[in-house]
Amino acid sequence: MRGRRKFLINSLLSTGLVLPASVRSMAAGSQPKERHKPLILSTWNHGMPANDKAWEVLDAEGSILDAVEQGVKVTELDLTNLSVGLQGLPDREGITTLDASIMKGDGSCGSVAFVRQVKHPISLARMVMENTPHVMLAGEGARQFAIANGFPMEEEVLSPGAEKGYKDWKKHSEYKPVINIENHDTIGMIGLDAKGNMAGSCTTSGLAFKMHGRVGDSPIIGAGLFVDNEVGAATATGLGESIIRICGSFLIVELMRQGRTPQEACEEAVKRLIAKNKGIEGIQAGFLALNKDGEYGAFAVHPGFNFAMHYRNGRALVDSGSNF
Ligand code: GLY
Image 1 (cartoon, protein in one colour):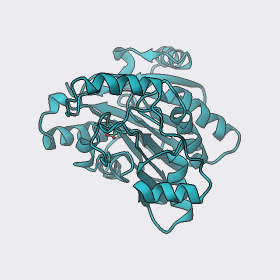
Image 2 (cartoon, protein in one colour; image 1 turned 90 degrees about the vertical axis):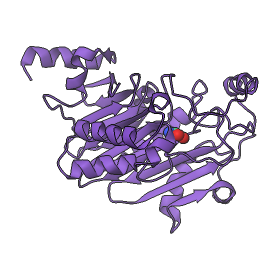
Image 3 (cartoon, rainbow, N blue to C red; image 1 turned 30 degrees about the horizontal axis):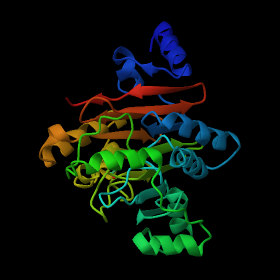
Image 4 (cartoon, protein in one colour; image 1 turned 60 degrees about the vertical axis):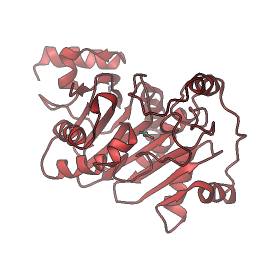
């Protein structure tokens, strides 16, 4: 990259501003390739404070696994966020249920799905990974596992934002997944430390007003999250059903294994998703990817998906490209 142009981009990045489309493709990792190690990436605006926490953990000699767990815990507690944590929008019965997964670059992984009353499902997912012979616990079993391991059970009271959203939705009770036009939905975080170790986390309250029992992509290893130290990591956001259908995050890591850049792999995954899902005009989904060299990329079906990045000399919100 020419010196002056690189300086301008780095200055913008260090202010934490959203990069305009004119510099977006460079920042998103296409041409010329930009690399950072360590690097923390997260989906959406809410990724900024989550990344800050993850970076703090890395700076204090924490592991990349600790970093991605602690980072998304910030979002799980953010009362203004209605797509992650117990304050999130409920299902159509008025009950908030959570999904989360965590994965290390050596293939260890854990997840929880359709779990109630647990403030930090990401920590429960980590406990499944570290303290059980299983990968995934769901529903009442996951809740009982949380109780047995001393997780406090929260009261099932909707947050003010969720209650308002649910009351408004009940006026029509229309059951159809809608395109995400908010500036957030789920947090997926992927990170690389200075030694080349990778890890990722993904946590959500899922699709608003979903059927009771519905599980999205976020706790499905390979759909919402996949990490392999030998290649890279990917995470997803948006309508979970569309992402599960193509094993989105696994697909991206495998495309990178075959030589695609993270940006090319995300674009190919979006192409596949569009081909395999009917009614694409009503579906938003986006992918974020990072390879083991610290190169990154992102792409979505529709405009509006952005991601947060944090590296040694800066932090930024970057608009992803989109198909339409
Ligand atoms: N991507 C979150 C969900 O569909 O549940």
